[in-house]
Image 1 (cartoon, rainbow, N blue to C red):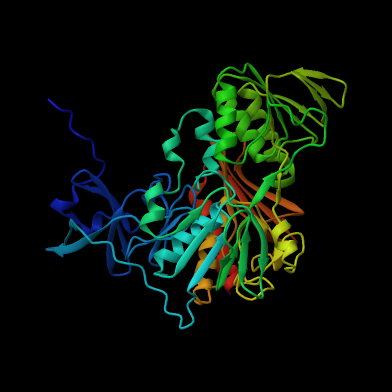
Image 2: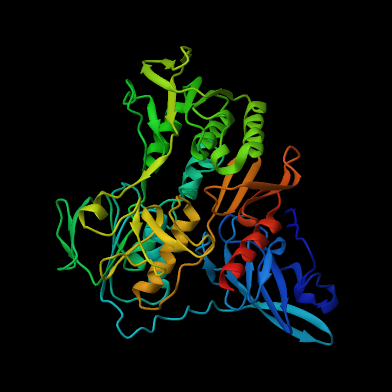
Length: 507
């Protein structure tokens, strides 16, 4: 006899009393599907109970107006339509009809997914070209078609693989706990079905902003009405002897990750150079494969520059508890075969080396195009560059941030996706300002660290809770103003901090 599926919460088809909702929400099920009922004022909505990104529980999130925000990675969905209105979620969630009878709420019938509002600008372009196959480029292409853009759409990527979920490369996939078929942001058929001309291994060598033409090496030039530059970033390579040896790797692309995974199958000892977020996520993933891992980094504490000394000490201890050996306030001066020489005079043996010393934005194309630059491509609130019809998003863009009242550039996956979505709207003439609060998450073993806001400098860190107990929220302040918030297992607090920052900058 087949085992019956277990469902949490009541069977919503049988009806529940409106008073059963707690804080305006109730999780139940309709058949085999888990459903969340949400009350907003006098209205009732029913949507899928889990985020379409990484399956986060929406019942534990935050409801704001007619939206619900996922507690894990801050995706946002419209309760009325199920549309994913904020990355990192790109796919909608299902919606159900809600009926009331004799004081009870009934959820039985799934609603047809409504089509998003089409672009209505009178000067909508006919040809759009996107340069870049990462988070910003893909999110822009997806949003353009979602918003009803019916013109020519070409996406040029210098990668050999279609757009993938890059955060997974240093986390679950590298650790061996996620299959490769989880990685594509969309299956190959998506591009054909949506008439997106995705050109891989495409190297853009020039842009003529007067003729509105893009030159691609070895291929036909492309014309455009609107152009999005989303060229991303590239890993920094160390100028030391041996940095180009076959067992020395960087991690940016799916090909990079496949190579490291293959090497990890036979590796016994690895050295990670750099204690960046990527470097330490790689260290955690390699430890999951039972490889001995040593981390070499120049700072006194890992991640102190971004998270401060208290969180830096916690991160170090966490990794040491999992067997990672740190060589801090030190650097690698040479790699000679399996012999790694340190500035301190020490020597490490390694059959696998991963460079995690950061990335630099790919700015060469923008510089050759003579766009306005300042440690990145300068854009306005609508992500427009200094050239008419040319937009920039993601790791290369420096934009006026309303939360810090400064021009900033960040290298976060979610920011790149959200900028791609805003750029798409503005290429269609919809005039949307980019005002999202920067957000990223980092995973170390079973410990997630969420970070909202942007604080390059601070004069105070207010700590709530207990960092060592993995239950904390840190507020990074300058002159009494909260610029950023980091947290561990304080998902709702992190969401509320994000919303509070948005509200503060809007007022």
